[in-house]
Length: 116
Length: 114
Image 1 (cartoon, helix red, strand yellow):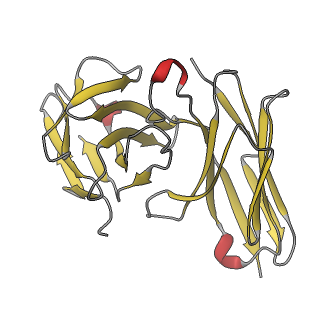
Image 2 (image 1 turned 120 degrees about the horizontal axis):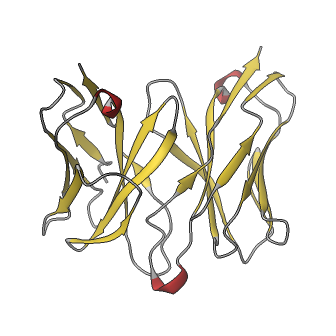
């Protein structure tokens, strides 16, 4: 089955700096890659996602890049703010064989701390 | 639209008991996926239901089961509870149709097994 590795496990930055979180996946059939942000005691929230037919997607201060050949994808947050502090999870899914994207395989998470 | 809701939010059970958790998806969503979240294992997929049928299954023992009703609401059941079943159980809903991808999570049910 799919295996997703996420690095780093913790990341500490100063407000205004950029943060980058990287994930690798093992199943070449995976073709959907969402990122979730989970604040303490809250539900995971989808912040951005990318499908395998594009290499980059941007939404204001966040962007995701995908390298299908190398099987890795990254989350980039620019101009970080204290409210960006949370746990970030990457995930991968495949609809190979006509199945749905209902099974997400998650990375272990990155605790991001943004210091004012 | 109202978001995904889960009941109960907190539950304390004793080893050996069974428990049923409920999830109501976003209106119009037909797919419900369940995940277990623990500090040690992270977020792990349990199963997905679509139109009352299990469409995907994770690597959990048979003590974990689920079902979906005609209104898309879903329940999961854990029988013969073990201490290791203590976790946050999250459900996520999505339209479930071809060309749709996003999953939206509920607030979770915090299960403590003593």
